[in-house]
Length: 168
Ligand code: HEC
Image (cartoon, rainbow, N blue to C red; front, side, top):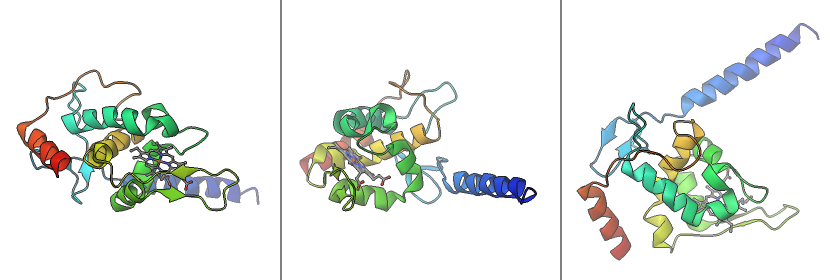
């Protein structure tokens, strides 16, 4: 019994390490609008001097316009809704997008906590990848709490994609 305790601790540690490794946030390709990891999932790109890529900075702004009232500032969570900086790491990209678009409700919860459906809201849907990369950056502590101090400029390709989405 006593001898198994360190073994259990080690197993938990290894499981934690394996999970952390499974989340690939490394930027490898750039389509002009944003960065993607090896699996073509949107990700952030932060320069050595701390300059945050435009989409991730945009995600910071949009998160605090649309999500933080329930999910708390900086993706930290609240008594009402979960910490999205963790959800963004633990959930698959399409799962995350699915919940944001379609909403979710814990049926058996003591309180009636409802995640609204944002699928028809362009102010969320056109910026959901931005919000996602921002939350992942927060989740792995690539950026501190608060407003990112330095950001890259919005690219022309980003501006075009944004316009097309908002008008579409
Ligand atoms: C009106 C309050 C409210 C707002 C605004 C809100 N959410 Fe939620 N959200 C919730 C609640 C409550 C839950 C937990 C629902 C449940 O337990 O089923 C949730 C759950 C989620 C989940 C699932 C998390 C997990 O770990 O299971 C995601 C993803 C999510 N919200 C994304 C967003 C995003 C992105 C925004 C902003 C665009 C947002 N939410 C705005 C209340 C909100």
